[in-house]
Amino acid sequence: MIKNYLFYCLLLFSALFVGCKDDNFDNPPLEEGQGEITFRFFEHTVYTIDDITDVARLKVTIKKDGEDENIVLPTIDVKADGEEMVSDVLRLDVGNYTVIRYVAYDNKGDQLHEMYLPDSSENTFSITHDQATAFYFPVNVLEILSADMLKNKLFGLCTEIFGPDSTLWPKTWREENEDITKWENLEYDEDEQYLAGIVFDEKFKGMKKLPANIARFTTLENIMIRDIPEFEELPVELSESNLQSIEIINTSLKSLPENLYIKHLYKISIIDSKLTEFPTCLSNHEKLEMLDLVGNEISQIPEDAFTKLEKMSQLRIQHTKISSLPANTFTALYRVYTFDFRWNENLSSLPTEVPSTRTKFQGLLLDGCAFTDIPDVVANIKELRTLSMADNKLTSIDFNKLKINENPNLDQLFFDGNKLTSFGVPTDKNTSIILLSLNNCGLTEIPDLSKWENLCYFSAANNNITTVNEGTFENNKKLSVIDLSGNTGLSTVPENDFGVYTETVNGRTEVPVNLKSLNLDGCTSLEWTVPSTWCCLKGDVMFGGNGDKQLPDYPVIVYNRNAPGVTYEKCWNDDCPFRHESNGYQLNFAKEFDEIWADLHK
Image (tube, rainbow, N blue to C red; front, top):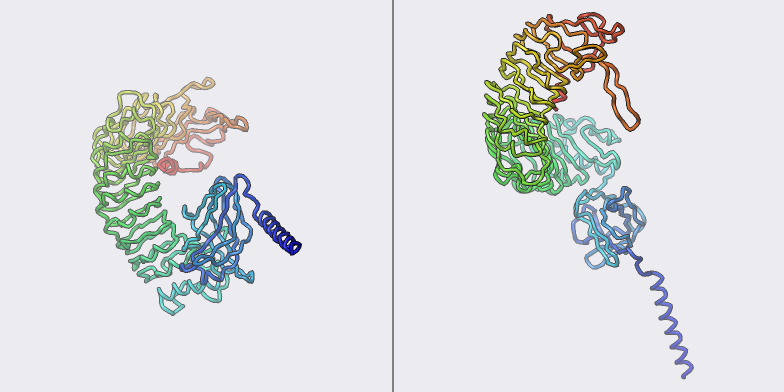
């Protein structure tokens, strides 16, 4: 009896020992810097997967913050656990991860679905040492459809728009065209080859409303609707989509659904359409980075329109009926680089508040508005580089409003098309302005720019200037581009140097060492010969990490179309490669002057 009892105890001890040994072998302690993760679905949630219970295995791709390469995890089993489908436990190094995609398999090993997750903070998880983490897959995933499934969905779109008559559909959208990547108006992701974009254009003529089932294209990132005059409406079902970008151009769209909220939307453009009010639903799109409202009939922007749009980096509101902007425009949108409010013909004032801390505000474009003076806020924007106020109602320039001597960043000024009766300049030296444009301003003389030592580009085309005085530009040592074209009354200029800064080089006097081009097109009254010293100037030395490089010689390019009195003296260099005779250039230069100036304005 005792013998049997001892034998029983020995067996029990052995079983416990083996059991403990197996447990320790299967689940060794976590290593330092490791944690655990399980991937889960809610079984009763409506997923884009047809039947979540069919999923038996997963292969998940993740990316660790700070690393360039994706990590493809080993295939893991998935089992039901109450109302959830739960994967086996995996061990990962401590850190923050983003889930990129997963591939689902059934219990036979056949692939069911391949899903890409939208780029979102919700699709991330963190691993902490010695702790377990659960990641729940979202409802809204990107389902990679087979070609046949995608065809059926696209045919469904056409049927909803045109009806069953396939002759009305886009010509390449046909069953017999097996390569769906060749179908017109479709854009595919270059790397993963899923459908990323659809363009609805004149091939969809007559479409009044975007079909609601567009939201079921879960890989769709952008749509464009253009040149469809009948188009009037977006469906509120877009709130269920993964769209990131929407462009609507040349349509009859009058409004957006009030409760529209597209979670991942970062760009929306509504151009040359019929909006009569600012779409209030956009004010809740906190991820919005780019907003274009151009060519609409909007007359007012609500005061809270921009309050939640802290990620905005590009704002363009043009050709509307607005006369003012919300008071917090510049404080709320502190990440915007350039505020583009051009061609709002009623806009005559700007908010005065600017952020107290440093912003990214570098450009203010107000061309074609109704300003009679430089806005007060300009002097307070310390990062401002470009101010463009062409074609306003300015009659004078008050540089006290600019405070350019206190703002070292402001370097480009455009006042074209304002009928200026006076143009005052700062009395103190200015070291920031490099570009000044005063085209078509009714000027009768060139302003005193002698204090502007860093001026590189000056344009005063199509004015009433008659004279360039001696030394007009001699203090502007860095001046490289001058445009006086279209001054038909210009008749008097300094004969030897045109009033620009010159030096003596190798015994040759009055050499314009920094001037690169002078535009005298259309100066029909001018009789002037371009000096010989303006040709064959020695190129600069470019300093670089691979050694210094001597740039080739060059001439000052003087444009003289429709200016027959402007001719060229023979070059001082007998081997000149630029001038083959006294009145022209031998070489064709890469750019016309207006192309050079347009590049500068950009």
